[in-house]
Length: 118
Length: 334
Image (tube, rainbow over all chains, first blue to last red; front, side, top):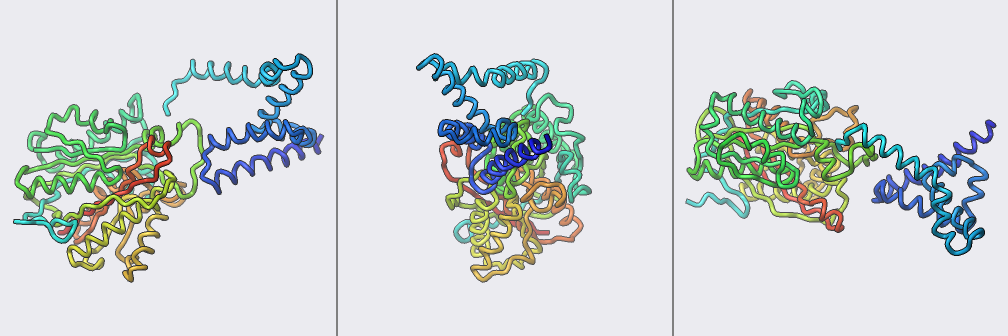
């Protein structure tokens, strides 16, 4: 148990350190880093390099944005195995449905309650 | 009679008098290093308004009316209002001046707007086109963030080179006669663009423009930097200020003892403003507060105020253009 926490902290922390260094040392904005991380997670996942990170770090690898890219790609690959070509389009969203729906629902709730100022 | 001196400077034959100033700042500025030099400190960044933009407008209107009331004048005594801010189409200014009912000219020089407006006001006065001119500028941290950077709610990290836009407004009344320090000369700057593209690094981008204008001011007038008790730039911040000192050192001139940047004076170190303050209000609240009062108390007798502006837009930044910069200077003497 304790080891799982420790590994999640180390792997997740390292991913975030990369993001922080990108913002501190390059002209990239947070928006660039966000997109870069999702794409990078997807590419690593496609090459089969991200799943070992998830096995090692658990939530430490799935919670950062790279984990979202990984879910999109691994979901698509899995669905292609089941239904063929059209799985490319349906699989990615199926595997990330919880996250996407949560974003839509919470976004709607917050937008209804609060008035954005900035 | 030609009042032009040298390449970029005019020397006024009847130097206009700065007869009154007023300022208002936000809460963070109020907790800063110059607290005792502000007329009014807001409790929060909205001050009872529905939006930050409305707050910025109300600050400018308040500063303008207060500066005029302080010298026992009426709005009707003002021949021209020259004012500007940082927002698109001078939004804060136009809504602030809506109720003033005096002839108005909108000014835009980004953060150099105060000095640009004071120069133009002095030209109107010395030219005999006006007897009394009111100048006002404003900026607001949250309106500037919204327009130029990211939504404030996003909580984006700010790099250490970045500066904190001052929430505040300053107004100046300039008259053809009266009591107060006089604007004796003005140097109009040229646009200088050294190719810096990072809108977080405006201090370093503007430093060469400030150095260029200061250099030409000294050449045109034949003065040494030590002619002035203090030379102030508007909002270069700590990084830009160090660059100006460096640029002059390369020319064999030591500025350090007579030079300060308004952007380095407003916040205290522990306020986490990073490289210092910026915005139209940076030079405005320091000039209308600290500098003007020091001149009235004769603690400062000769001051050169250099307004510095980054003339980029959000569109130019998105199209990956570099930042054109400008600096204007006014000599103010007792």
